[in-house]
Length: 165
Ligand code: SME
Image (cartoon, rainbow, N blue to C red):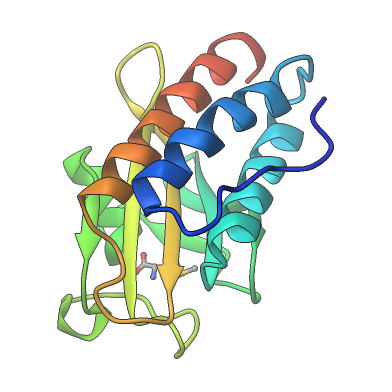
């Protein structure tokens, strides 16, 4: 297992994702505990980009329930039709929110959060089984390169889940 992450300096976010994602793949290969791997993925994103909050909500019965995360304490349960996470769950699409105050129904777990991206991961039945929520304390902090980089990560998470969740 890789014990540290190499992050190229003075690079664009796209270049950082391009460098980080293979390192995350190496980090999770060889470990078959899904929750341990989600925990390290959350840490790798937080450590690399210093985002305000990075974490997973997992589908359990009829709610999204807080999973591995990095950042301040957060709401533990989100209904499928609530917040940005619920919106990503029900629409089955990545949701990019440049200004959380302008998103109707945004759930403010922390007042510092200003912008947010939430991405779904799909199980073998093509149903969303978890979402990744990344929050920034800067307005309009997430763009296409984040969507592309993080969507690649979601495909890695789906593969992990197929064998170990
Ligand atoms: N803001 C999210 C809730 C989760 S916290 O930000 C960690 C939402 O509106 O779904």
